[in-house]
Amino acid sequence: MQKFLASGDFNALMKKHAKEVLHLLIAKNQKFDILADVEQIEFKPALPKGLLPEKNAVLFGLEGYTLSSAYVSESGLHFHAAFGENDFESMVLIPLCAIMRISSGNAVFFVSFALPEEPSETEKSKNIFKANPKNKDFFKK
Image 1: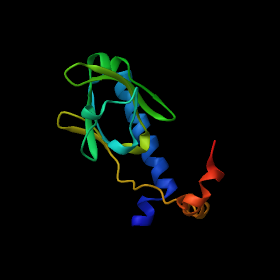
Image 2: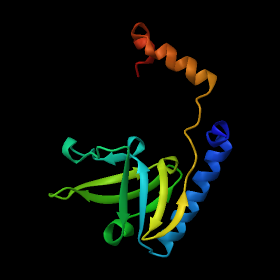
Image 3: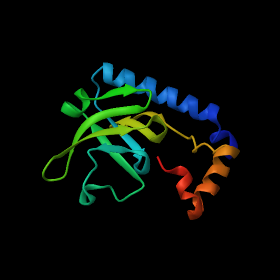
């Protein structure tokens, strides 16, 4: 079962479903919550250290201005949000694969059971090669 949940086909299905649910919620201007994996979320500009979530998952509530700024692309869900007492503004990008749950109140619209995809044999080899500090010059941009 673990192999199936980590398969590319199952991950693609979960991403497609998440994207469709998000499109509908945004089109209907329906407020909703997103539970997502913190490590995969991008903040532009980056959040100051004191504002970074300390847990593995974070819950965002999208309504009002945040919901009106939200849109979905191939890379994920994008929206503007303000954080902390001083309302530090940042553009948030949550990749579709990082979304764990979409809900509103007691209604759950989407739950992802997908596991991260296993890297290909080529990726595994490349990562082993990169891990050796003697090889660092091969990967300079």
